[in-house]
Image (tube, rainbow, N blue to C red; front, top):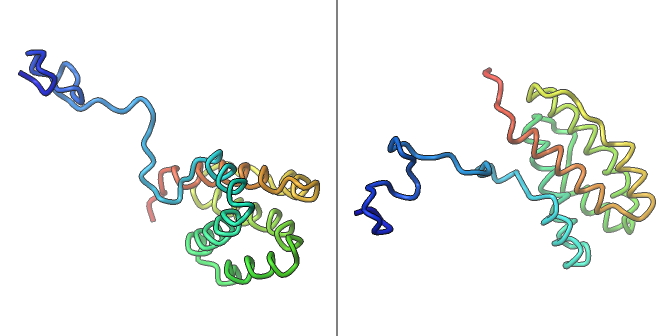
Length: 148
């Protein structure tokens, strides 16, 4: 009998051929892939604190992925706090520009969300900008890496 006791000999994770079935939804194994709505909800629940952590994480990931030393996520977060969010509006332009470079490196067609992100952030909706950026980042992190 199988794990469910049905006597078919097929466990729930196996198909009729005995091979493991693929999950209905792809499972994100890359820790850089984040659910955009979770980013939004956590940022709202924490009154923006998760947003600062997100800025640091995304800046660090882009810095490492692109091998750039002109990106300083720690200073970006500090300046965002010291300028009461004004630097964050600039980052809603800068990070999507870095994202375009990451898209090209991953072999993806560039999708520029920088203008939309800046406009949303300037209108008081930076969290929506974060969602747009995270959606595009997820595409980069889940793209097959070109062989070096």
